[in-house]
Structures are given as structure tokens and as C-alpha cells.
Length: 289
Image (cartoon, rainbow, N blue to C red; front, side, top):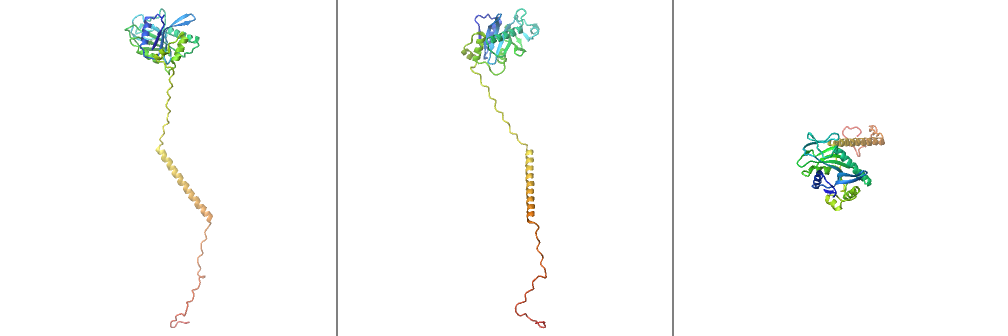
């Protein structure tokens, strides 16, 4: 991660630890630490403004005045605790971590508006830096969406890295050109393009991956239904065939009419047998011979 610190900055012990922690991270990002923003009442110091490809994070870095270890309990209404004791935070008399980070987010938003630049949604975080050797858990607590409490130290920067890579979920939105424009609008200067490229920023946003077209699976027809369809088809063809034959027979009978039966031959109209040709043979005592 690229970390920029003004030469005039006077970092506290917690802020110096935070800078060392950021410089160990392999994540893509730009952090401007101890940022001075002009306001109507003068100059406002912001702990850090961090750009990642997904978003912008406004950070307030807070250390401990004594060495405390234990379970961290945070709230927007009650004092924070480490274990059974009140967290001994280095916030000054009557200071409140939530008020500090909310005020810092508003000041950064107003500075962008004065420069007529729209950065989109800004997230805020309180980074607690325990003293060396102290262990504070959990490493992240959410006060509300867009406002988190994170424990960061150079001895174990893993949890801080995970938080910075995931505080603004979604596709990348910040190219190196947009980061240059935003830092120039906020501070009047911008990092070199080569530095941002080395820090991991891309010149163009990656094209969104095309989702594969969903293929509608072919539904295998039910075999029983197929058999029913075939059976009804065969039955329909058979009925139609029978009807065609019946129609043909009825049409033929109507065209021919009733058939005439032949008359039986009469015995009275039979012709007489012809007389024998030549002389007839006579027998003794035969009359007319």
C-alpha cells in the first residue's frame, strides 16, 4: 500500500505505529496520513484518508494511555471497555471516538463538495492501536453500517488488511485517474501515476465478467404419457378407417338400387323333343309300326 505523510506532520506514537502497519500491507491502496483540511474555522486534522479500488475510508487513529489487554466492548451510548475496565483511550478530556470519526467524515465530505467533486459514499473507522505486547480482541466491531472499530498494530496487521480489503464490497470503482482527481480536489496535489500503478491501481476498470447463458434442460417426457398418446392415436386412426369403409358401402348401395331376381323356367314352355331322324326300329306286336 502506498502511504503518504506530510513532511510537517507530527505523528503520535499510535499514528507512527499505524503508518508502519500500513506499509506492511500488500493490499492495493493509497493512504494519506495526518491530512490537513481547510474549514470555515481554520484547519482540521484528519487521521487518514484511505483509497482502495472499492471505496474511500476516513480514519481516526486512537492509542491507549496504559497497556490494556482483553475483550473489547464498543457502544455509541456507553464508554468503551477492555475486559472489565474502561478503555483508557488517548482521546483527551471528554473526547469520544465516535464523535471524532463522524466529524472527520463530515469535514472530508464538505471539502469534496467545495471542490465540486463527488466521491460517492464515504465510510468511517476508528483504528485502535494497543501498546506493544497488549492483545485486544475482537479485531473488528461494527457500530453501524459504514462505521467500524478496528484494532491495528504492526505486530499483527492481518485483521487490518482483511478489513481494508472488504470494508466497501462490490466491484472496483477507483482507477488511478480517479484517485489522482480525488486527491487533487481534497488536498491540491496528487501522487505520481507510477506510484499508483506500483500500489496496484489500474488505469481502467476491469470489464465485468459475462455470466454464461443458462441452457434450458431438455425435459424427458414421461413414458406413460407417450404410451397414452400413441394408444389414442392408433384408436383414432382405426375409428376413422371404419367410418370411411361404412360410408363407401352405403354409397355403393344407394347408387345400384334393388337387384331383379331371374324368373324360374316353366315346364309348359319347354320345346318338344325333335323326332328321331331316319326309320324307327319296330318290334314285334308294336302298334303303328
